[in-house]
Image 1 (cartoon, rainbow, N blue to C red):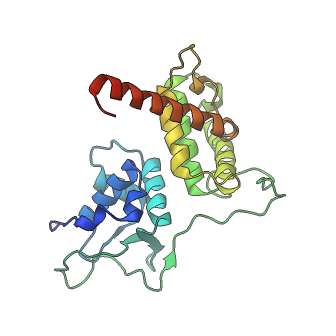
Image 2 (cartoon, helix red, strand yellow):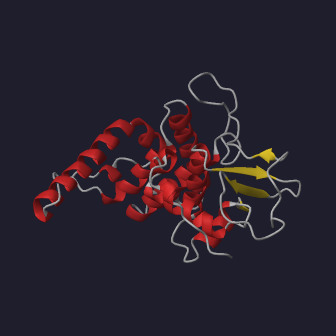
Image 3 (cartoon, helix red, strand yellow):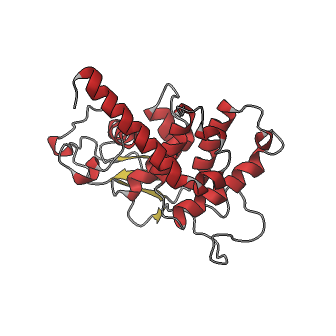
Length: 248
């Protein structure tokens, strides 16, 4: 793969500035794996294999990152005639050496969007059983899977995540998280940040939020309190850093 150039326009780009550190890392790594036309595989598993060869990032988190980059106008994903998913980086300005791309162009292809939601009664319920990959967005399913992985790490004996119940539990959590995204207008990246923060929280009084957020519904219902607690903890850490290290 040819060397790529990171241009100084990245520093004052509003779209780049809106990225989280995780999203920015994925964005830069994609630049290094795309072909001369700014195209690459759009499947999260192939992106993970190429961008994170040590496997330090779960496929679910790669999917969340790809969705965030697409939402922020930095790439498009599309399904080509061969049935495979590809991505195209927007505003690609790298030097083109190859005469042809290794991947199909996005023109005239079917855009890959989050699955449409089934119509419900207004509160986000769609009726009947909710399938993991049928009636909720893939992003919600990925967030629910990340939450389940976290719960298993701090509560390995949690009965709702036993082998015979895990799939159904994640499906139910996905439905609740989908409502948080679609109805409550919560940003997937913000939900993901809370899920990542939960294992680290240790209240001064012994209270730990992770002991009380053991489902997608709890994550949705307690979102505001969790966000306040996380921001307060971060602010406290910043103050401590300033007093100890002379950083203000």
